[in-house]
Image (tube, rainbow, N blue to C red):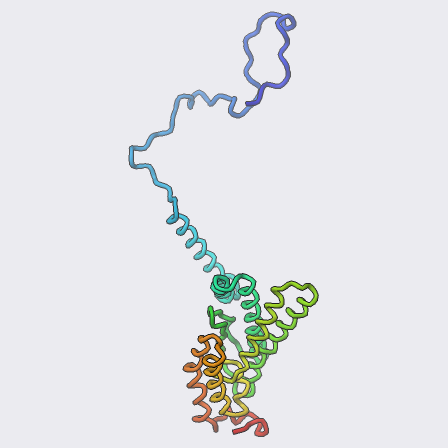
Length: 271
């Protein structure tokens, strides 16, 4: 504890004996007020004391409550709350299996690609949802309005690979300057994603891009997906796009004379 400042004079210097002086410091040297000098906190009966949450259950409860608060805040406050949340979930899923740098490069390149579609949709005066990530399947946007012709839909389809390729090119140029290997990985993933999306099958971008040219491109694209999965050994996840793309492939044969397709100039249309 601290001591009173200064030195007391010796017995020969201080003259007649005086009564002891109180300490000049404050804090825990200062005695409590007399009315509380002998009071103690009330004691609870045995077994009635509240128990504190400890251990794994307490930590999990705190983690879940914090995650719920974060997600609620993101949905209500952040304009792209769904994008942020699904991006984080996808990043975690990819990072578990492939590492954080792979996950970071992949989700960034997917995000750039999807915003290419969003920008073109907005340019055409329509609205769409923000990108929503789907772990191990990429991401998707959902148009709230649809263009009146296959040509405008093709423009929306090509916008994603264009902006995505720009993003991958930027990553590659930065790698050439910094020699930071994760940038090269991001560039590789970006080029791969955008090239794969040019396959004219189902809801892949190539299907929308080439739909005005010929209804047979969808059939070709579905067959190509099967060959890539079975013969080349690309992820079997892509086979999911085959049944999903069947209705898209059949529709042009049923409605090839619809105004939606006929709005495309005749020189641009094939069989």
